[in-house]
Image (tube, rainbow, N blue to C red; front, side, top):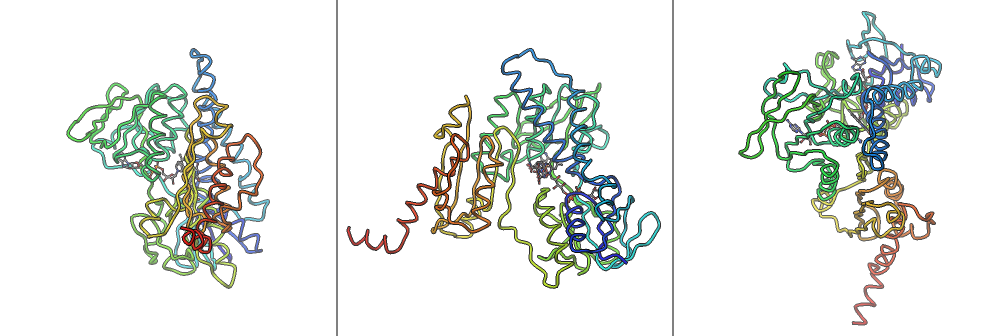
Length: 462
Ligand SMILES: Cc1cc2nc3c(=O)[nH]c(=O)nc-3n(C[C@H](O)[C@H](O)[C@H](O)COP(=O)(O)OP(=O)(O)OC[C@H]3O[C@@H](n4cnc5c(N)ncnc54)[C@H](O)[C@@H]3O)c2cc1C
Ligand SMILES: NC(=O)c1ccc[n+]([C@@H]2O[C@H](COP(=O)([O-])OP(=O)(O)OC[C@H]3O[C@@H](n4cnc5c(N)ncnc54)[C@H](O)[C@@H]3O)[C@@H](O)[C@H]2O)c1
């Protein structure tokens, strides 16, 4: 009898397994492919490797327009990065660390039994961490076309000369810039009024302009109607308002969101509730059957590796410890790894307004910090939202290293430190994070002006 059987060894499943063995529990981790999941094999790792290579190539091309790249080598390089990351999560490594690992497709028989390769395993608890797969939209003809997804793009032998990307979300935009920088002609189709629709609208449009300046053709408010394959070309018919036209590309990458991996798990038969978005869990990450937990992409609402980790650790603790804790989504942050990067933490301005929270907004342009002035064409901006006392509600940053800078805001927010306290923190010169220091000087003054006693005397003087 195991203490916990975990189905799926991606970011979420690995976090559950390592936390549970840390508490001395007997764990069985089941994986149908190889440990590491999407992040290692077809997500964060290969995409960031491609982005890094593309950034280098883009820089070289600034000085030597004729620079030629062998895309076969680029793809081989990505494979090397994947294998390097994988070397830290191989079955041998997991077993050596004390995790019982089993390769096979798991199906839940009942709340205490899981079947793998025809054999039944007994357990006190189950965690489902089976992740998500690319959602394929019902476009006429798509089933007859050899399209790419994040699962196949990084495994091509060489990159296509041209590509149509369907979807202007995180995957579509990151890949559009990277592929274009490597020399692939990119056309991107987004059905909403803006790319990166979940982000600050002004910043999303800055990214759009950057991509367009680099040569990516972007079609917003454009719907894909039909696709055919002709002479090794994909021809996508799209509609923008009343206009219908065709786009042609050697390849088509579909990146229009995810679907939860809940099929063939046996969960519906035993009464685990699901919706179109995935498995339903309570705040303790329990499904409708209390000793079966679910974490990561299969649950959402945030489909990021770091959120899979957070959920995985919490589910393991809730299994092991006598008092179960609720998941807290108030300090979520994420970064889109474009150039410039776009990072977001906490609440957006729309959410703050919707909840009628009294707030103070600060904006600061990177052009006022010396570090940005040292790099030609460096753009960047911070939007910071504080409550009336000076505590962080949310922030969004566009610019070089925004994904790193946002973590300083995360510290203030998560640890409930007043933003004005940053005034006393020495930041090395010249760094991008000085931008936060500069804002803190204004916040410190505003905090004093917001003080009721100060306000009283100021009114009195008038
Ligand atoms: C292109 C791309 C780029 C991304 N970039 C980032 C990024 O920069 N930062 C970030 O935070 N997030 C990023 N993400 C999202 C991130 O990859 C996911 O949120 C994360 O990997 C989800 O982890 P998971 O453990 O829930 O699922 P997965 O990693 O998908 O793991 C699920 C595992 O379960 C296994 N499995 C499924 N069914 C069964 C079964 N029946 N039996 C046994 N095993 C099974 C699968 O084989 C898989 O290994 C990116 C995603 C993509 C696609
Ligand atoms: N840097 C990161 O952290 C990172 C990078 C990549 C992916 N991810 C994760 O992976 C998830 C999936 O990424 P994604 O880009 O597939 O999804 P997404 O939800 O971020 O974006 C999908 C986009 O496709 C559009 N769309 C949907 N149907 C369409 C259609 N028929 N035609 C044209 N456009 C259509 C949507 O309006 C949306 O803008 C993300 O939500 C994110 O959680 C994270």
